[in-house]
Length: 297
Length: 161
Ligand SMILES: Cc1cc2nc3c(=O)[nH]c(=O)nc-3n(C[C@H](O)[C@H](O)[C@H](O)COP(=O)(O)OP(=O)(O)OC[C@H]3O[C@@H](n4cnc5c(N)ncnc54)[C@H](O)[C@@H]3O)c2cc1C
Ligand code: FES
Ligand code: FES
Figure 1: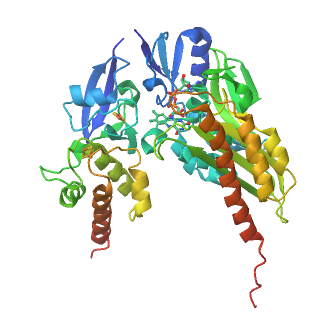
Figure 2: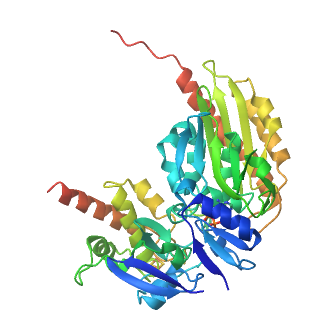
Figure 3: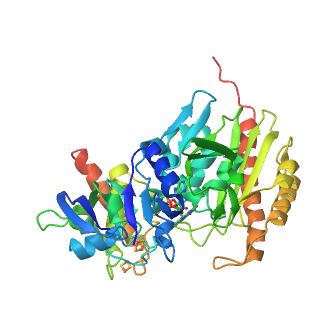
């Protein structure tokens, strides 16, 4: 038997978590919880946090110019928010590829993290955007880099009295280029077999800096690939470097065989995804660099 | 403990006393008698159970009824007016977009959601909009043409031509 409780104030949620922590199952969109074999096993209170306004805000924090995204914002809200599109295009792109409209209208960023699946699509994007997770409890709060939140498939450093309250994305300087690509069974509605997120600053001479590469679904948690990043750092995109970076991704993948795919396929496909993304990005950047003819006055 | 839930279903106020674990698809079908909404997979993958919740397309097998308290729920039963099918439903029939019909209520709701947001959707947008709805019979093309046809008709009516 489980009791249902819906709260609308963040303080009340924190108070409740402090008092009843381990017995509480937080419900946001429910798109992960409701498909679990025993959705409510072990919980005494189902705490609905989906209507806590403070957890749904998306806004820039004037103090440090970070874009702050409330954990209970849905994928659809994040995907189409003007600030997110402007400052974190990569995250918008990843959120647009989650499930289908039916899923994106329910599922939240906080739930995507809270479920701690290595296939969570928002996570590689957040990792490339240097995002921090904010964990809040009664009289306490901590921030950590998003990948430090996860400790394995389905597990995280979250304490029973903490809620994921928001994600903080620092402002990125200069012109940004990025992409998120995933491979799955079909285009709509499907969990990734492998995904790649890429972000860098692109300079006027075509060189990249601050390169970030993260992989989803090919290891127990989402991983960054420093070897691939170093290959491209300070360089222009060219075929030889693309091959090297892709090989580094395949090497970094530590996939498991599971119901969705084999390990071998996953290793190959992450490399192919990065290759595909970088070739397309390279073409786009070349077109941009080609000097345009001045218009006569 | 059971919970009182108020919903506005197809414009009509409704009240239920439900267990916290009851799903909206079951409340609609078993309590409200609205069996138009279908359950296919029960895990969010087929779209047969699609309804509009406060105007947003969702899978009703993934929504707990308690969590929908105070919300508007629009189901396929709300599309017809005075026993007359709406233009989208008629287009589905005319274009042959219905075979066994199991996916149809979900397809209609996904299409209404699209048409509510885009007056002139491209074919790609239409395909995207129904990408969360599985159909095992039609091969989708006739569904896409029915939606395209309705979009054209509604646009024409709006501009008065
Ligand atoms: C058909 C289908 C397709 C899907 N496709 C994709 C996909 O393409 N990509 C993808 O990444 N995911 C996909 N998913 C998974 C799921 O939709 C996402 O992970 C979603 O973001 C989960 O969010 P939610 O709000 O629904 O989580 P819930 O189910 O409400 O919660 C999930 C977990 O997180 C916890 N939690 C929720 N919010 C918080 C919080 N603020 N603080 C702490 N803990 C919290 C909950 O207690 C629970 O343990 C799919 C799911 C389905 C059913
Ligand atoms: S029954 Fe809900 S999506 Fe299949
Ligand atoms: S008509 Fe049979 S599933 Fe679509």
